[in-house]
Amino acid sequence: MLDAVRAELAEHGYDGLTVDAVAARAGVHRTTVYRRWGDVGGLLADVYDAAGDDGWEAPDTGSLRGDLAALNHEIQAAMSARPPVMEALIAASFRSPAAAEAQRRLWEDRYTRCEVIVERAVRRGELPPGTDARRLLVTATAPVYHHLVLLRTPPDPALPDAAADAAVLAATAGAFAGPPPA
Amino acid sequence: MLDAVRAELAEHGYDGLTVDAVAARAGVHRTTVYRRWGDVGGLLADVYDAAGDDGWEAPDTGSLRGDLAALNHEIQAAMSARPPVMEALIAASFRSPAAAEAQRRLWEDRYTRCEVIVERAVRRGELPPGTDARRLLVTATAPVYHHLVLLRTPPDPALPDAAADAAVLAATAGAFAGPPPA
Image 1: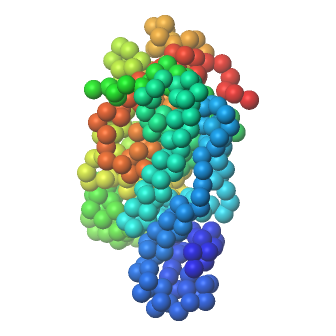
Image 2 (image 1 turned 180 degrees about the vertical axis):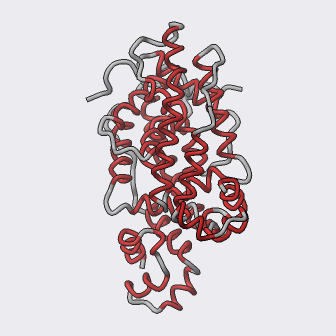
Image 3 (image 1 turned 30 degrees about the vertical axis):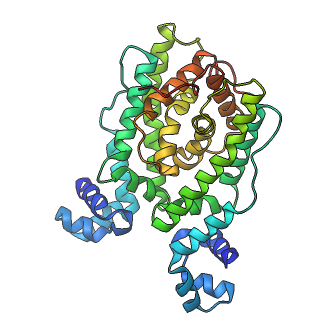
């Protein structure tokens, strides 16, 4: 069923996504879909939740800079993939509260799984103890999302590394250690 | 007419935005709207373009850190405003190519107008000459957008200053001077 949702999204985007089309593609009766998922938002929420169950682990390259750059390359590849399933999911999140909540859960889970990148860097002595992992991770990754999702610039092959470098320099200078500014 | 679009967006969001409702609210015949704007995407593109004609200037507080923090506070206030017109415009950009292109133009224009923040900081000796203004500005602002638009976390009053601080530390360490990494 979720494969059918992804395939419909890839072909028609969110605007072309209907419970009937998903049911037909999956070979399931439409009333079954309505009973179990309610509507398109419910189907999308399950797609998100399934994406979160994939056993994904943060990159482990041996250095903070390497881990953040690898993470950013993964993000850029996923956001630039064709058909644009990620983009369709993000678009859907603006229109379906269920999809928005599922997206929020997925991203929360992904950033939590990435915290080990910062923990390892602290253990290696690359970062000061007490570095706020979430703030560092958002600083490193946000420019990649910002360019692709909001600014709609073509993927810049230099950006994943450059954004990782900037975050490492900020973190090394203590930007994420200690309390945030009052 | 554009006031009518904004009011309809604020009340009903993009999904409730129709040419007929806009025409009725503006007291204009619907065929006039269709002839001049084509569709809802055309109306939204004009709203974006009008937003870009507002004579907006970047903050000038006397320091790089102050300018970036003031900019981030403006962004956070605009994105958190109720009714959520900015959020409705961003949602629309995923569905209307005309709105997406207008949004891209608006953001390009805003970042260009912000480049003076970096030029002034270089003149004051706060930053190395040759600092890439755009990369610095995106690094400073992207976390604010990322939290509000994609992660959907509630506005964090500490984030605008914290994101500005991190960008200043990275910039001072030379993150945006010289070519991006190969």
